[in-house]
Image 1: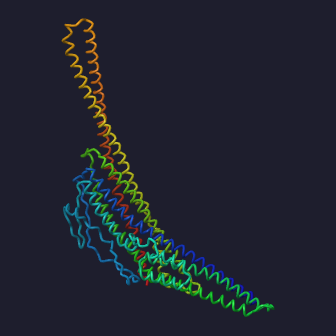
Image 2: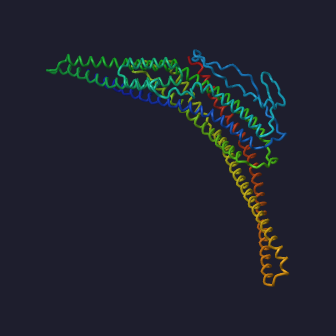
Image 3: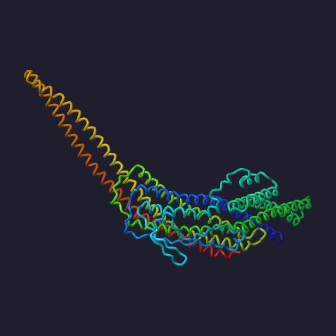
Length: 565
């Protein structure tokens, strides 16, 4: 009965060890995924901010080449200028680091260029309302560019937390990957711990360094847990052999030798368990003291960024409403190759903006999902039965709410609006191409008409030179020569008539091409006005709606997470 109970106990211990090893392997995978997702999030965040500046520049260059006026009857845009509030107070868990966060809830200020065009202002309480009127598409684009740049600057605090431009972790023995390579070739656990601790102190408590250090610990923990599982099996075998000998009392078997082997296996298992416990404790300390503050700070900074972007995109939406008074009938200037290139650049910039926003949303979801999966696994009791800390449970709940908030806000409508404007720009690009081809045909017909006109003048001159001497000599020559000279004169006259007919046909062709060119210019102007009026304001309206929804969702997460102690 005792042997059966011992076997059951050994089987339970081995099953628990296998489960712990499986969980550590999954934790290692998720932390590796979190490190990769953070890098992708940093890159996509920097790319999104860069795409805003690219769109601003491309839109300005496009508008400068489109001389489209705004009607004087168009109502002005009323922009709200609010004084910058104090930075948002971080939750209690963050007060020890006091991250410098810029509150993004402030409304975008009126740009200096727009202030020069101010027609009137109304002060209401602490807000300053400024009426701004834009006279042309170029002025509207200048106002939009100012807020694009402000929106891009609103993401700088998040860029700092994500270390979007930090290239320190490019490899080498001084990086965490270099430390990991050194650890893989080191057989002494104390040397590995010293290397990690020294690197931890030298690099500091940046989010990327915390994640990479956690990845190093997770890899080390998995190796130690795997080794402990093998030692557990070895220990159980030695214990089973000793129990079997004690039960069966076989002769010629040294029981002291079996006890010594079991004692050594038990000591090795205890050492491995202590190493695994130390690794698990180091991970818990990093998670509770550094990762929690960094994650909360990143979520708060992201919320503030989208609050600021909401204000800036709302201001852009108000400015874009003046495009309703845009008119292209007063301008019949032909499209140039430079304008054609600017339209193509605008289409490319809008497509890049669309892709950057899509990548940013995806990588943010991937990062939060990987982090949440890892945190959930760290909540499971350790091998010695110790429960997770309250901070770990609150942090996992906080990240889970973050994940749900991101899953509940979609950017499909924004992407659709941006694609619609990119499609309208592509259609305008096609119209401009047709206009340029019509202009080239006009130029070709003009050159052909000039060439034929020069040939006609040469033929007329030749005909005159040959006709005058022949007419004077008709009385002094015979009838045969008279008929020959008359045929030459008739042939020259016919050639002149033919040349004139060709010139008339060429002139009619030129007039037709010029009419088609004028129609192409009108179609281009109509396409420019219709495309800008119909699709550009919708882009900023959709962006403001998306930013407001995301800021509201993240604000709910941050307010709930402010009670994490």
